[in-house]
Image (cartoon, rainbow, N blue to C red; front, top):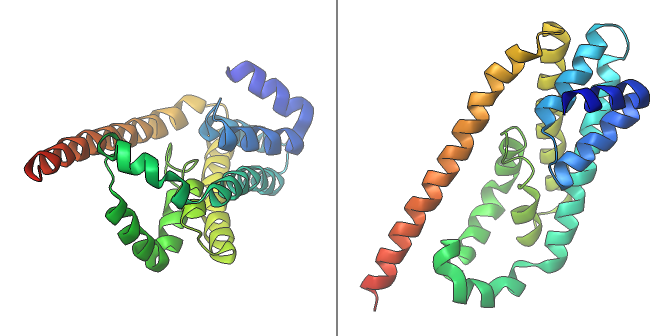
Length: 203
């Protein structure tokens, strides 16, 4: 995978970085950790501008973020009420929790989106609740741009500083990504178990 990404970046420059980050956000075929750190390596070798790849990567990811936000906002959470009512046990959510989530998101949604953009694995999914719960456009764009720019810059600078030692980046970020996925899986299983117990107790 690394070879063709490098080849694409070498041939397409900042435009390739933009397109790869857009695709990574819309349908993650390759991780942003790979894209931006490899672009950072090229910047460290003097073949690209560090600032330009950070801007291109941020713009590409934001295009993908807006894509999901628009779709989720168009769908709206109300369309999912029959699904939640019927399959809420497996989704580990109830409609009253959705209503409480709306109030919580109205107060803390900006911080949630900002932080989520800097978490591996989670960052591509943040636009969906933001859109469905109709987070304000301005708040969404500001929080998303700041968080995305921070994450993109971190990866690019890491590649720039470490040069060809890409393995060091992977050794650092790999366990973090794995830990986040494991935590989300454990949280889902816990929610599923407690949700089912509540359901049994209410019968």
